[in-house]
Length: 223
Image (cartoon, rainbow, N blue to C red; front, side, top):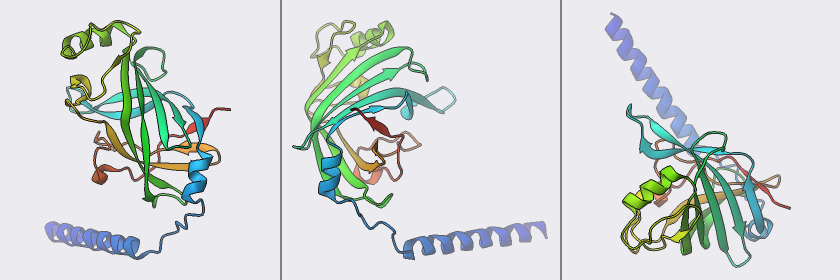
């Protein structure tokens, strides 16, 4: 009898789920895209910074299978010609007291149309086709680089940047000749700049299928 009730409950659960999915698909979108693409591009010109140290799920795992946290801060600059600069500081701790490395990425933004997460949100592709530099800021990370990033590089030193542009860079999983690219989103709201929230399973934004569907912690405009 109990087994019959469990089966019936499971079937009801599936039916409810299917019905909800159907309602979501048939529900008209509220995204009227009131902020046009040109208005968005004009409004985000300038510099933006993280409000505080942020956290992401990384692709690396702990011994128990859980994802390692990735702590960072961002400094982003967008120009009228669709070029950008992004500086990322990676930290060992949640409060950003111990910096491990700095990444400087320069490239172009491609606008791919409206994103349905919010009115005025836009799909964007960030392509690091101009420059990509890494600077070790901690002896521990320096030691990793001098073991894993040897071919094509000078001896790594603290606070000295080296270009990894189109080079094989094992720590980041980049292959020779590869240009780093992310399929992301941009949303401007009350003078706060949102990008896409990282996938909770650690997947990067490396394909259209992995483009984010929700908003990340915003950056604030620098006056």
